[in-house]
Length: 251
Figure 1: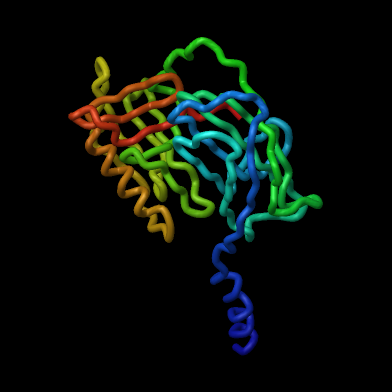
Figure 2: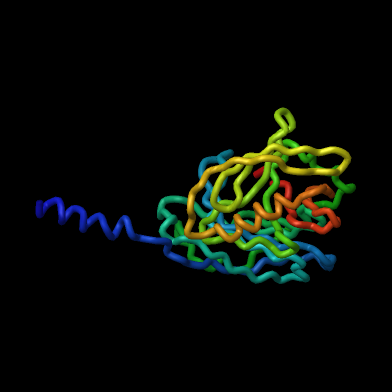
């Protein structure tokens, strides 16, 4: 009995261990003498990268709407407990204009392999402007939640990005709302959009529930939508944006 009690006691610190908040910082800029227009967005993400071609895992990110002019100082919060010494972690930064990348950085290593939590100064390079991109299709695009009620979405530490994907074949939309997966029927015609009966998982999360409640409430009020380039806006009956999404780029 004593051995069982001892073993349980030894396990307790592991079972009760929670997130270990930490921060990685840096500054991003570009050398070109180009002023960013109102509404330009700055994004920086901390990612774990693996084998070539494998999808990176996002450990933390920050997003600044209407970012203004460079340099852009950033602080990204992440869970230190998820970092492994033998793995590789990088920072990627970019500036979006009208939902399309205008300046992007190379990946800069941090945290492991002799690197620390200060990414230093990250240089971004210009992406050659092109003619306005055709709107991304509503169905089949991975739409990542960017704003709710006009306010940038702030993710909890280690939280997965909320997103929507519309499936034309069965007229159902699915995704992640901050804590749970969900699926719902939808109808669309000539810019009109409405969601029908939905279903989803029923997990309770320590973080992300407030975001999920706001996200689900917004979906219940949708009457129409608008797509401009890589940006999707879900609108209420008065044409006001309830939620905005960015088309997730290929990595």
